[in-house]
Length: 116
Image (cartoon, rainbow, N blue to C red; front, side, top):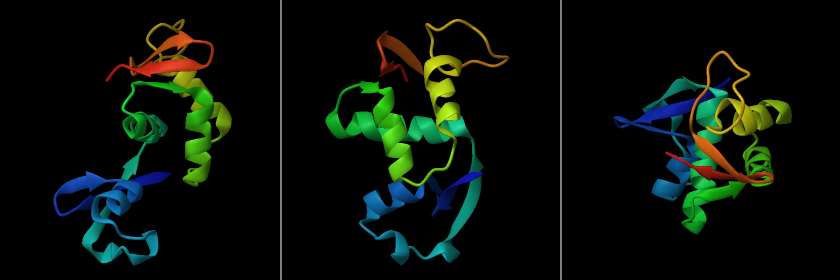
């Protein structure tokens, strides 16, 4: 279970709050935020957006997402992350799931492009 936070009317992840306001994680006053439950897809999208915004390019490698999420202490299993990026949320993958999303496009071996 992972959370985003409603902070003065806007929804942020802790990393987004830290980046936007320049605070350290231990300095955030959680009395002024409200926890909002998020999904694996939302957490992965947040990670991908952060990775691609840092270098101003829309492509990313699966290993970058895995490393980013591990460093962020997001504890989804590696298999869950891989399944979401390579299959459930990939527009040009075979449809093997009940619900699918067109968040990414595979452009090479382990290489994806953010469509959103």
